[in-house]
Each structure stands twice: as C-alpha cells, then as structure tokens.
Amino acid sequence: MTGDDKKLDGIGTGVVVDSSGYVLTNWHVIAGHPDAVIFMKPPSGTEVDKRYAYYATVVYANPLPDLALLKLTQAPSSLPSIAIADISQAEVAEDIHIIGHPHGQLWSYSSGVLSQIRTDYTWKYDDGSQHRAKVLQMQTAINPGNSGGPVVDDSGKLILALKVCR
Image (cartoon, rainbow, N blue to C red):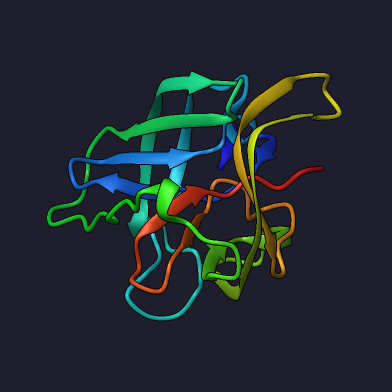
C-alpha cells in the first residue's frame, strides 16, 4: 500500500523474491512513492493484521518494463521467498496461477492459461507513461489490485510479476 495517514494512494500486490526481504512489484504500483507498507498474509484468514505490516523502501524502479524492487526495513525471520522460473521456458497453453488483491479483495487466487507470449510489447497508461517488455497474455480473472502479484507455473515458480493494463 502506498500513501500516508490521510490518503491511501494505491494498493497492489508483490512477491518476496529473496528471504532477506526483497519484494518485486510493478512500477505503476509504487510510482512517485519512495516507500510503502507491505502486509504479509496472516497464518490463517484474510483479514489485514498490523502485526504482519512491514515498512519497505523502493530500492529499484524501472518504468520501461513496469518493475520495481522494494526492501523490507526489517524482514521477518525465516521469510519464505519464491523460486523464479526461466521465462524462456514458458509455453502457450501452460496452466498458470495468480495471487493478488483485485479491487482491494485481499489474497485472492485465480487460475488460467497462458494464451500468448509477446516479446518487445509496448503499452502506455492513462498517466502517459510508456512501457516495453516481454509480456504474457493470460486467460484468467485479473483486475486492478492484482498488479505486481505473482504469476506462477504448476511447480510454484514465479513466471512474472503481473501487470494489469488499465
């Protein structure tokens, strides 16, 4: 989540890519913000619990591929991280799994199929920012709030951080 005590500017999803506290998300999730609050899913249920809230700073942001890397200032002990797949091994018709927060509905899961791989794809957002990257077209339920969330293969490896075209 980005914003301050008075106004929530944005909500997105991210994925822990290193157990020392690095979190991958989309650039448009954190654009214009030097930091964010990250809520980890509690051991049970889906309610936001302040005991699982962590302050993070933006350590890398690249608008061209729409990616950002955040670092938790105090990572929880034994923080699990996701294994990363080789995107060149992704195949059309492959089953995929998505975790995110569509429309603010926390920790949702959907599944679908990889329907196209687009190399050097370009797009822009309403704010005028222009982007280019290798992207995956998917047939699955995704909405604003899923951005930055993991798209994983059947073995649980990260294929990419999800962007939702607006």
